[in-house]
Image 1 (cartoon, rainbow, N blue to C red):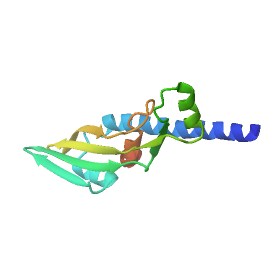
Image 2: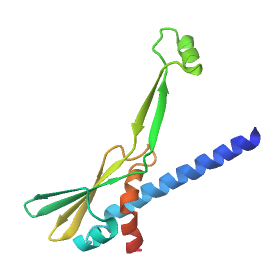
Image 3: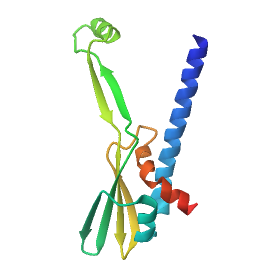
Image 4: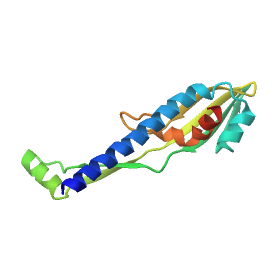
Length: 144
């Protein structure tokens, strides 16, 4: 039993460490991608899922993520708190799922990246934007 708990704890630490690294990579990419040419973005990120043009501004959008879904259980709404705890303990109540993903928007003017924006449920409380790293990681590897 103790060995299983230690193994579980190590797995959780490693998984959260990876998520934290991805969140850091996404933050770095917001700075490092600025100034890249359209050709460089195409080379490291590929074809965008969507393109938009307004005046002299072009926006390329990429979907990013690893398919992570967070599940939380909420107990049934009972007046008696002890009954509510009991119902949650025996599996009554409802499960709520939230799929994590990111839409990466590369904003370009004069054929160069001006800004990088992220939207969507991009990560957890301590790992904001971690789902965005999947789309931009090749660009970081090229910049290093």
